[in-house]
Amino acid sequence: MINDLRNLTIDEARELCVRMGEKPFRAQQIFSWLYKGKSSVQSVGEIVSLSAAFREQLENAGWDVGVLRVLAHQISAQDGTEKYLFELEDGNAVESVLMRYEYGYTVCVSTQAGCRMGCSFCASGLNGLVRDLTAGEIVSQVIDIMRNSRIKVNHVVFMGTGEPFDNYENVSRAVKILTEPQGTGMSARSITVSTSGIVPVIRRFGDDFPQVNLAISLHAPDDEIRRDIMPVAKAYPIKELISACDAYVEKTNRRVTFEYALIRGVNDSTECMHKLAELLSGHLAHVNLIPLNEVDETGLKSSGRGRAVEFRKYLETHGVPASVRRELGSDIDGACGQLRNRMQKQDQTNM
Ligand code: SAH
Ligand code: SF4
Image 1 (cartoon, helix red, strand yellow):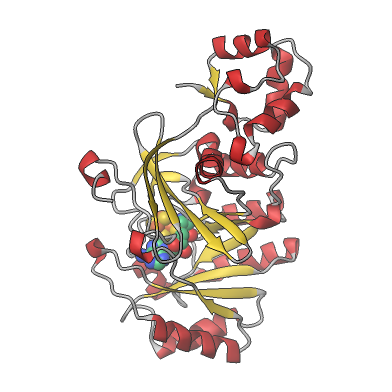
Image 2 (image 1 turned 45 degrees about the vertical axis):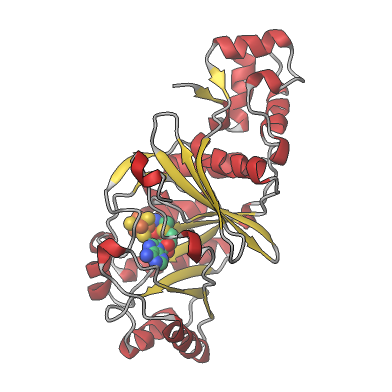
């Protein structure tokens, strides 16, 4: 395993420089070269503001830039959404998506290879968890996309494969690295982390990152339905989840996004619609209604866009702001939430 420079926070990079007999400000130089967006360096040797002797010293100690290998890259003919399949150092693969909006570019990153949460509608968790990604591997998805697609990324959403709050240490380190002013300089307000609802970590997150946005995969208005489709609900009932979200709002003054994928015959009844409005009215919330991406293995069907619009109208007339998510990259299986790891070679050729 290499020692990945992209895995270091700036404080750790300073410590490394000092340990190697260099001045701490060298860490700023390292960061500015590592995170130059489109022209980010890909090896220690390219960080030319460091002396040749220091670069050699770093290389001898096993330090390198953890660039990800692009195994596959698809571009949607419909809307320009791009999907990347990256190979990690140990041969595992993860997907990331680049989306274009009027207000700029958003990258959706994966935080784990696989996922242990086992939500019934989701492709990411079909084979359970393979392993956590390192912070460097999360950061690299953003940086390598900027470099490969030659664009500046404005927003990062942690909505790819994996449960960010099941890998909190590395996710929080990745947020710190991405928002370091000496590096990409991305603002915390342009980052969103989505969780299936691990309550104790939601509480910590509000303390640690009061400027980062929080999204909750709700997908049901009551515990009975939620436990059926999301096993995490057995550990953390909706009441506790909402109260952790209220605490986040209290601390941060930021609105929470609740994601709700409409699954035919499961969570799309008129009763569900009413219960959802009742649950969220009076909270600083926004509901993102998602027409389900159908995953063959699950047998679950989408309720259709029309039903999502009906939900939106009802919620809005009952004081709960809501929107229906645009389906980006549907021709390349590219929308967030339908990412899956394709680890076998024969699968990769079918992408
Ligand atoms: N594990 C985190 C983040 C990754 S999933 C979480 O669950 O929030 C990102 C989003 O996609 C979540 O809202 C998730 O519930 C949703 N999602 C998963 N499978 C989906 C599917 N088949 N159709 C639509 N959305 C889906
Ligand atoms: Fe994991 Fe999120 Fe998929 Fe649930 S929806 S299995 S938490 S990635």
